[in-house]
Figure 1 (cartoon, rainbow, N blue to C red):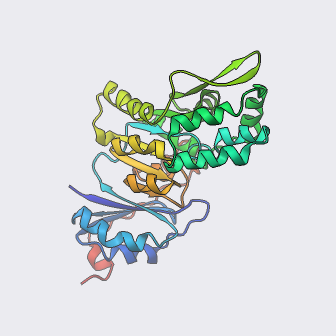
Figure 2: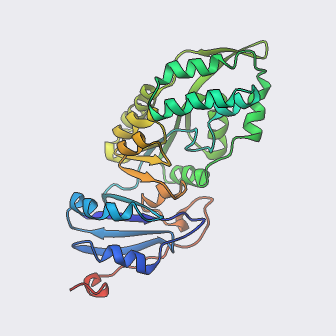
Length: 315
């Protein structure tokens, strides 16, 4: 069964050249084909050699580069289910930290958020503590935070709409708040969203969260739920997140992605995205940017080399 190494740079600053790609291609045993998904941005290198040996050999050098990479088995690379975190994954901020800013508590609450995302503090306990500090806040601040502070990650809408157009299920599960996930799901196209509900009485936050709490268990259970409902194999499932509460779903997924993630989350993932945007998740599935929905619209450039060993000067 063919194996695959995909090299992916940030589309805003393409860094892949033929020289760079050929340098790594020449080090892969039993390489069979090369296919550009987006010129200068993403390229597939197919090979029949041992996947783990090749990964161990190339990864130390690839980790020093200013582009991302992913090793995987080529079969079933297009996923039928995506389960994603929201804060600092699909959007660029932590919503609770932005709410705290309006209460003059951003430094205190951000420190708790960071500790929880690093896995140093219990998520549920820390979430309750942070929300308690917001008691008395006018609920209208939620709308201000969404309007003024919530910005999508580059590539978010393209990722979701492209997967939806290819009949995948897309699920947003957040330890944040449904006020924000419902709006983010609407603008990006997520088919399902789940998150915590803030208790609001007389237009004010009470400092409480309505049960049940959405946490790491909810995330992994949601993945299992939608996987089983659709009768999918684990190889059909991708999960992406950045924090410690994403680790269980990342480990459960057939392909777990750490997106600009905390160290513990990166260690748990199959692939780390450190440089690129969310379209990296499409390139990993074999989509060229000509396939993107609301993407940049350039055509894929495919180059297949049946005599690749000769082309690369390998003897």
